[in-house]
Length: 206
Image (cartoon, rainbow, N blue to C red):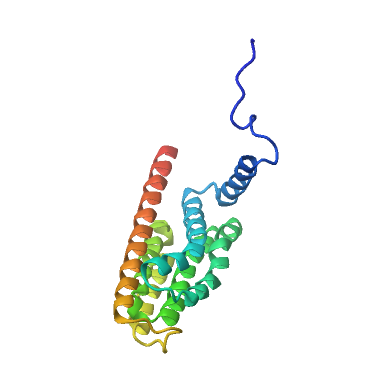
């Protein structure tokens, strides 16, 4: 009687699964946070991509084939995505640039492992979209270089990869292409939605 209701945070038992989950979430949010909305957006995208990579083998298993072992090569790029916020703290431009660079590196590796017939090169589109969106007018040269790199990779390496780690059947490659098209499309939409939030934050500061 006469006491204020406990907040959800105060009602958590220390060490309980919910409390541990809350602490982990707060640490992740703090790691991604940045005063610059553009940097914070790139940090968020990088961490979402990194957190989604462990599920890629499951996507391939259910949508393409039970031969999923080549997908584990894609984990090589995970540290690059996870490093984006740390790099951005020291140099915001380098951190933002690392995001599409990591994406392009992962795309090249995936195309080499799965083969160009998997349609994985479509991920170059969200890489170019990130480069075009998250650099200011004064930083356009960086954006043009990154967009040019994505275009060069597509034109220069497409069809030039060696024999993939595993050769899938034609029907499996069709399923692979559909999976990658849907994934790249979803990522592009997510990048756009995050960008709209950045625009709102920038306008509110003026």
